[in-house]
Length: 495
Image 1: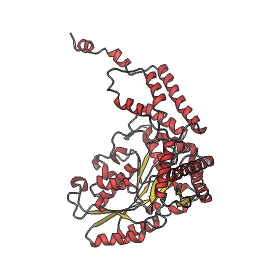
Image 2: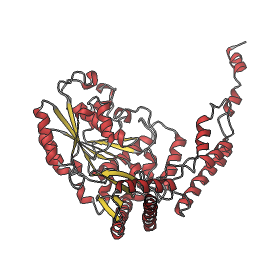
Image 3: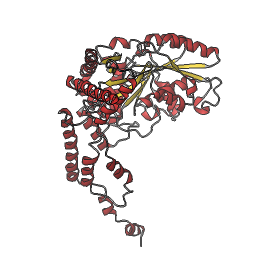
Image 4: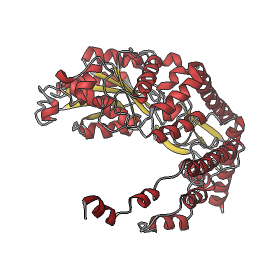
């Protein structure tokens, strides 16, 4: 028996292929069904026929978690039917126009199709002479232009703000090390501990990044904020001076372009002046709010943001593309490359576009650029300016409606689309308990959805508008639901 016969006796080559492949006709049939499911869901959202959030039934949770490893395969049509009945009805809810909680915008329909097409190509966007390479460079150049970064800056599409922060601070660490080779020795031979600064309102991804980079959260200074929840620049300068006097090595300030709690925008020019004077790296966390530079109501607050050494933003947060899609920009492209690349300088071919794998931690990378390219091509800067300005205008209208209701109290009104408030009827002394209770009621009902946070020590409700389908009626629906839930909680406390 020859080797081909022996192999064939063990595995039926033709039938094995049939286990996974489909004919074009079979794929079209299921593909049309999948697109119909997406379109039907979008129609229900547009008509307000879906709750903002629906709890996963206990029986379904158990069914999914307890399902054993499949010993044999299942029919694809049956699987798609299961997804239709048991998966699609239970999303996080962020694409619903009455969802005001966590910041993830719905996807523009064209970008949904882009995600589907990218999956069909299934290319690794590490680099090389392929369409994805040129498309990613194109959208990065567009984002640089919007952010005010030079075209020669480095850039990379990443999973989101956490990875963008990690990339930016990794390049910072490479540039600010006191050792001859931080990549060889890590932090082991760093003679003086590095210190990083962020606002007390800064995102937790900054904490994660300093821990992952070996700097340690004990050397992350959380600078108090002013009445508008912006970093207190006087306190920042004082803290840097105190750390230098203590023999430490201040290296970086992370400023916020739109905090998640209030949408606060730090005073970039003043912070950049301090960084320039003290020779510190300036990173801007703009995961949510950097694109707010296009908002007509807030553009003036971004003066100085372009002075940053690095910046992170999330197109999946407020540019209407599906997750995952984040972006890291670094002014010094060569430093970005040197911080990550394992290709020796003498082997680099600068006649071609460099491989993205040399500018970040990933080698195999998804084709994130297509969905973003499609959305940016459809909308253009003018379209984005109109949509983002509309979201901010709706948030401003929400604040006006809150102010007009006697039993509501506005607690924080940032310059972007985050609004913090509480239900505060006369005569109620424990407003924290009341608002906690009504929030549980609203969330459990699921017809509209928002979250909470702490502002200056007070428990507040927090609503964010980043949805192009949200309209004025949804704002009224939200406040009515809160008022009704608040009245129910007050009544239960009295009885």
